[in-house]
Image (cartoon, rainbow, N blue to C red; front, side, top):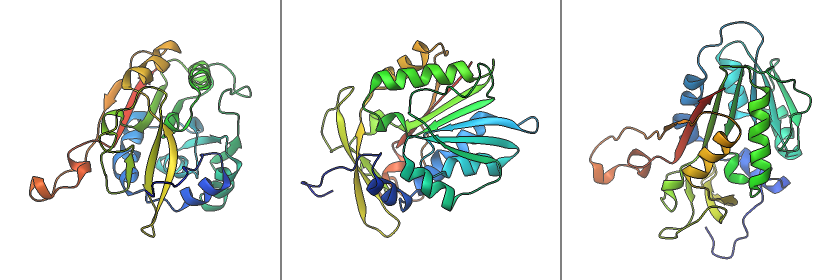
Length: 246
């Protein structure tokens, strides 16, 4: 990261264009398989899943390709959705712009599963996230899973192969803005603005919305070779995956 580089906000066209070229290898290895595993098998046709904060559509494409999920992929960034529609079209994915807070077109108890990946960390507004979590709880059917994947707050400052969330040695508190360095596929980097929240704050979003306290997964990669030569992601989890059910 260049010291005077201004972090990109996630709702900008520049961020959308840069995010299109993000190096997603760690997310593909550590998040995507576990999200699908936590959702469980799709037990019938036309089962509806929400991908809340879908970005450029990577998770939505996984859901649609994994079985018979019908996916509503939602994002407050028109730029992200434009890229998603162009790069990841699918007959069972409907991409939709929303305000990041409310799901008024969905009835109570009408959705079979919901996922939200790397979204809470991008929003500075706790009230908006609390409202969104309540809405997700409202629309999910009894027993339906909600899988929330995000940056691991215990891994700030760790230089992983494709990202670094915060500065090494810095101490962050709930609500602090954190510069996050993301590697792009061409080897260059972008700096985005994310927001630190402790695991306790994530739990409070869920339990405050009426969800049971979640299970927490901290996935790492297997180490190949001596421990001293292993990449950081084999020792520390870059991401956390929270799973709860209505």
